[in-house]
Image (cartoon, rainbow, N blue to C red; front, side, top):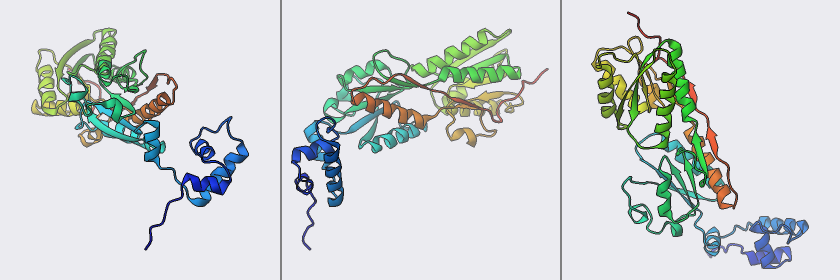
Length: 333
């Protein structure tokens, strides 16, 4: 069977009775002020009749673009970052872009140690989630948007309202009557965790009789169990544990059970993020829901604006306190 040839821009030009350059202007979206609306309608109608589709790969070569965005995340094992990718990829696909994902190791010296030796040749832009802005210097000016990394005057940002989320958790616990609060804190040097810690400390500092103790740990169940155990075996242990992450909260659950403490009658526990694990725990976890998918979507939208020559304003996505069975009033006596 002979191969069926695809219609070309020359075919569209012949069908519409215009030049190929006019077809390129119309189908490339650059006709405004240069081609009449009637001619635009004629070209688009001809392209539709012929079933013409531009050769995107050839167009990208002409434009010097790859239509590829790099999403950098701290780890691929944390369940939180899956929805971030999904949200970013959904918006990207609507605009003819693809998204690749990689981690940026903390000790990487530069692009040669990262996913691309020459990133400016392989990608059009970067979404950098939960990482220091200084790392972007290694990408030699590639357009970038920071996600959940804190406000920055020079680079567009999309952040969560993590401080407000932590204040909501603290207000919930203090409203129940808790005054001795333990913070099982992520021992990670990232803006999001610094913001959570500062907000919690400020609430407890303003609380009459409030006492805040803290133990740092890796975002790991075993490390979190050890950190929570240190807090719970102190001379005057907390009646509530505030955990920086739902996975850390799972470690706090294990520590409580090992010490014979019931959740929530002996100890209230809260998490942060509201990943699927939060409802797998028993009792289900009180936590702050962060719209991870929306973070990726809004970040990709901001990056597309940046690539189009605009200057997207900073965006902050609010979290939502989700109260479940892991918190109650402290035991008296």
